[in-house]
Image 1: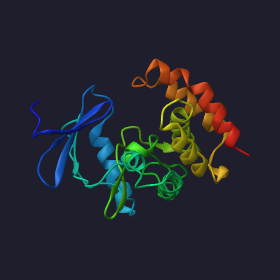
Image 2 (image 1 turned 120 degrees about the vertical axis):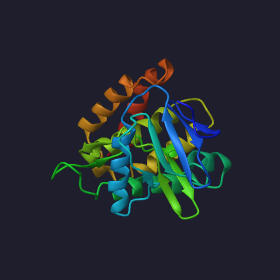
Image 3 (image 1 turned 90 degrees about the horizontal axis):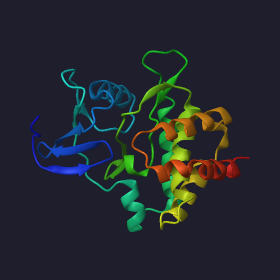
Length: 220
């Protein structure tokens, strides 16, 4: 299928193409997930005031999602540039998780909407505040799993020997400042899911054990 405009961004699974000044198209390269279903969840949480881009809902394609074009750096870009401190970044991630988990699920009376991939690359810092993108992994369930996966993603960076290790550790420490949101069972499940993630490299998988140890050291 011909893309609508120039390529303006790429992730592990998807490419983002320009449509016009207001809209972009995100297209999955591997065909993973269901973009139409993802858009429905985004509109659901947006109806409760949660900060996500607007989407144009369509059930005609599982690989394409048309959404509002966001202007601003990702949280990761802001951290690298020094325009955002890791303490503040961790507090923002924690607030985004807390706010998300106040929203009732669409299909269950007891579960909550989960993002399951909330980390600095999936938060865009716009002039109007942070916006959460990439809802490919979204499910309904126990909020503890959301906290565990965000923690595991940060911890995998924190235990590397890269320049991002120190800020990732600070982000993780601030994220876990309220330990009541994280459980042992959720952490075990987060590690299992990360190990099974097809976009992860062998090196990233090998870091999971050390990452889990770091998280546990920060838990009370």
